[in-house]
Image (cartoon, rainbow, N blue to C red; front, side):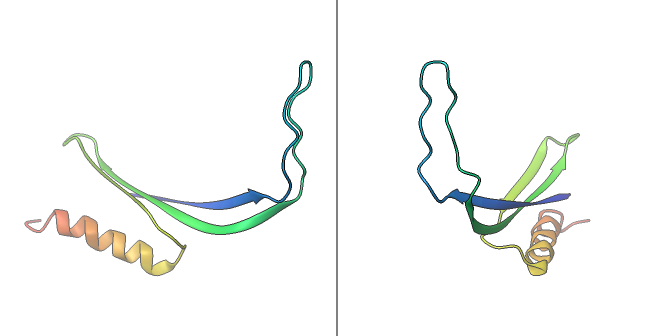
Length: 76
């Protein structure tokens, strides 16, 4: 099981598109759009895996994902 928090950003100004001989130009200013969690549980020998992406980052999300994993192994 692994967890990876990711911050989301948005451009505040429209980037200048690329032109011949120049790359596109982006302003350094950005708007923060929150944090999401990506959870991954994998069992390679059984060929099974679970992925869950949350809307916000909270400690409870981790606990809920562990409950989902435990639900897959009720006989354990």
